[in-house]
Length: 252
Image 1 (tube, rainbow, N blue to C red):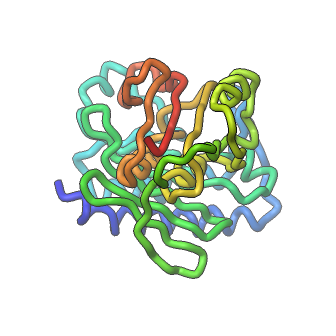
Image 2 (image 1 turned 120 degrees about the horizontal axis):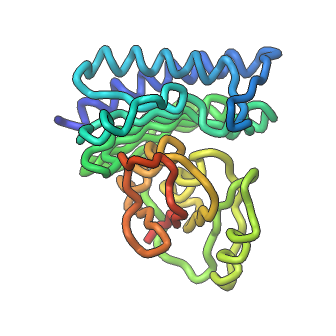
């Protein structure tokens, strides 16, 4: 499978989903809540359908795990050596608060590793994509496309943190870094800010699911960065429990 051939098709799918999400964002949409009390809107469901239909059109043999259809049992998923991992709208809280920092996320996972990812930010008019062995790119709000790469190491770390989830454990970790600057970002954009060289490290000592991180993780890897668990091992995907362990994303 040639990732470079897949990237334009996956980006087109993400762009179509983003357009739909943004059009809903501009309306007086209703917010519902799932059983775990997390918010969901018609934008999540519409984006999910566009992405699933698009991925099935270009790759009928690759299964799909989406936040909005995460019902496949482990007895089935444990045999998936390659699968699409989708978060139709990451940062629904940012979506409902109209901060603009929400994203559409599509990743390809192979043997536990995120090897291709596309992240679009509908309200910011930005898009990021990358693949193993191919590098990473950004399309800015003017439509200009340029290659991105993590920044070179620096003495004062630029720490990117969640606007919604800056908990005491994360603050304590940040304090151990010494001199630093805090860069605020929402959703999977935290990974992307490191990938484009605008931040250096993102500690996440709180709950996330695989679909929250897969696409942006792939982009960060393609841009020269890494995402490790607190014991120094690469963050992996396709586990029985879709919850991620605590991790640190960085420019290395």
